[in-house]
Length: 399
Image 1 (cartoon, rainbow, N blue to C red):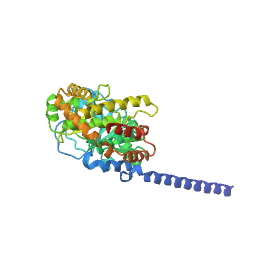
Image 2 (tube, rainbow, N blue to C red; image 1 turned 90 degrees about the vertical axis):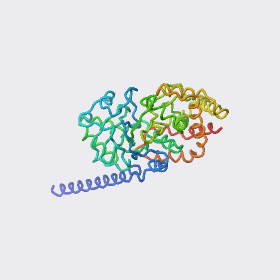
Image 3 (cartoon, rainbow, N blue to C red; image 1 turned 45 degrees about the vertical axis):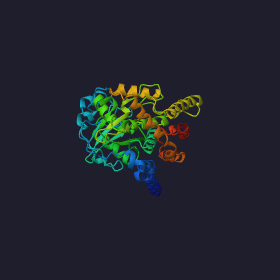
Image 4 (cartoon, rainbow, N blue to C red; image 1 turned 135 degrees about the vertical axis):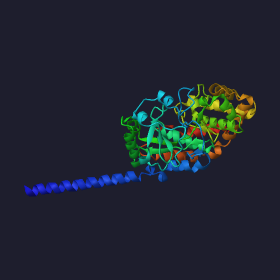
């Protein structure tokens, strides 16, 4: 009897040791997962490769005035001051975050390095009204940043890379796996700061979240006629807006300005950085027309072809598509750029369209797609990474 018990105890110890070894090996594999380490994450490295010129990584430029995160879209166009706490609370569900902490939009400075967040040093979170999957402003001693949940992580990052490669200013975007060691520290901090648990549950229900820099500025609905007039009359700004529209055509993204889409547009997706005084593209994502919708895809290509043909035939004449953008810009801001402004937007569009084939090669697009596919578990939004669709749009623009 005693021998049998001793044998059973020995077997139990051996089984526990094997299990512990298995857990250690699994933990080691998780720690070694390339996508958990910024320096080994090919998608983040691709972001850094285009960062020096066009990705807004969050460096501080000393701008003053009311603050607004580049991804934030306020539901009421009359709410011009993002530092107004009552305005922020009007459109979001309330948690204990609202009682314990109020993000200082007017004075917050961007975090200098999204790849080196000290989660233990996060001293407050505030939920934005924007983003069904959760958008949180985070404040640390080092600076502020944004945590964003998304149902289209891969499509957002892919379009950000495209924007930067085209020379369009856009916020840097880093992916964090919620089951990684960093992701766990993030969720633990959310639990600590929000006793209701909603923040940690909201973000923890997703396999990956996005980190983006906090910056201050205004979107088109908040700019007002005086600010918009002063800004868009500066050389190069309407051309920059035209360049953003090339990105939208490549992505089939109608959620900004109605160039070839019959939609209302979204003024929150065009931002103006306060001190930099630059047009910034936010919340872009690739929305390809599926391969099995040949008719709809051909109709889309025909629209793109008609637009580029008209611009190349007479670049100074106001194309009807840009006349619609002019109307929407006036509706959003009160500023009418006039025919000369349309000509400037068209010039920016043509200049950027002419660079697409050179800077967005199929090889580069496939490299970004494969980098995003390397994440485990798989990112949401991978189905949207249709390189063939983007290549077809580029070929149409080059005609």
